[in-house]
Image (cartoon, rainbow, N blue to C red):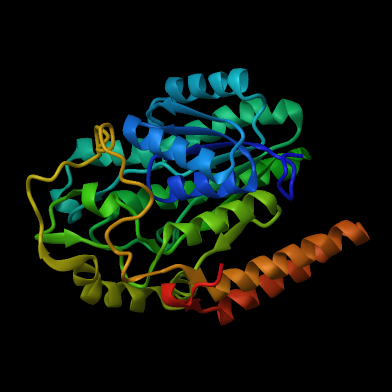
Length: 357
């Protein structure tokens, strides 16, 4: 034990220098886990390490690597095991995107988004499984999005990548279940999150980019990833009432949703401020090499830091998990999943001003 409530684990987080990945690193650190943080930006990584140590991580290592490079990811995994020891959890959170109509995205840009936002997850998962499968233990958490089911205008490359992760992860999960291994993979479908990406994403929009409201703080996303890592038996988790509503609408009336997004999706992803053409973007090179941007973007005044839907799902999942451990009956999993789905349907989120720690 490390003085925390739970035994410490070795956790790997990609995209850890900013945004959701950065918030995940802080959440695992507060739990008392040992961390390996992977990203491209040195200053962002250094800031993430300092924050993790302050939050209570007993050991943290940082590795500069581009997840689009499979050799770099494999090398990072090897180094992590040598310096930190066998890892228990691998979180894929790195991504890149382009905000533009499809006709204005070049083939090179589309390829790069796919290599980072989809193949980066594949490379990370492969590196993790090469080590987890022989040990017959480990958890892989894929940071997904409502966009994994529902593509939106101006984000065709990113939508395609998230859909690809969804299909890849479903196939992998079936294979793991069939093999009888105790290694698990799960996916967390996120809502719009207040991260720095909206200041450094490559954009051809006339106005500055923004997440589609309602917007949530990255700590909401991090709590979901932390919970999923501890409860990986469930195939996926939905975060936020907006995610639940979007996925249900897409399942029931996808054509109507197409038309709704055609009318609203362009305006909803832009503020009223003109885009600054000279701003750098992180598609091919990190923006946080010399400056640490942290986990939050510029929407703190609008972002929600608490979520009742999330609280209900986590409380019910933890209760059902404890019940299964006590009873030893696998059949308890079905009530958990059904009740969790009902909780998601009924869920709502609370604004930052009503956050309860």
